[in-house]
Amino acid sequence: MRTRVKICGITSVADATVVVECGADALGLVFYQNSPRCVSIEQAHEIVAAVPAFVSTVALFVNAESAYIDTVLQHVNVDMIQFHGDESAQECGRYGKRFIKAISMRDDVDLHAMQEHYAQAAALLVDSYRPGIPGGTGEVFDWERIPSDLDKAVILAGGLDAANIADAIRSVRPYAVDVSSGVERDKGVKDESKIESFMRGVDSVKSK
Image 1: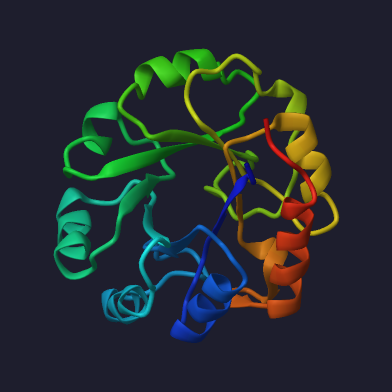
Image 2: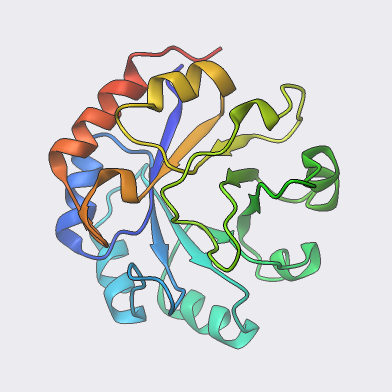
């Protein structure tokens, strides 16, 4: 079984089309105003409408107001939510959608405790930690810090690109990987050749 792939930070229908054609399993839409990849509700609605069946759409929020999340969900028919801030388990579960909880790999993070706290999460996304920046740093963390006995599905993020993705999968054996800046030619603009190279790297490794 191939490791699944989510490509995040999609900002246009054109990029969404390329991502789908290259074989990604999911695409992410960022609803965080401080991100260069942030999309409006109107942009997101147009992108989601262009995504065919069997490709998942994920809305990413960072400590957003509940009213804003509700508004996005009313107008954009995404499949899942990804919470990338300090949201509580109760907040993550209040929207009636399956959700992914992102965990920044601070020095004191206990992923066993995190999977218990976010028991309703469909997966834990583990990402590099840099103070004040909730993801999208393009930095790699020490993959050996991820326990091999977690019950939750693990989505690996943080500085992944075509050059390291095969090694990342062999090391972590994640359920899925998440990439954004590693397949861009500019912030928020995807590069088809980089996506193709990334997907070849994923395909070169068979998961357990």
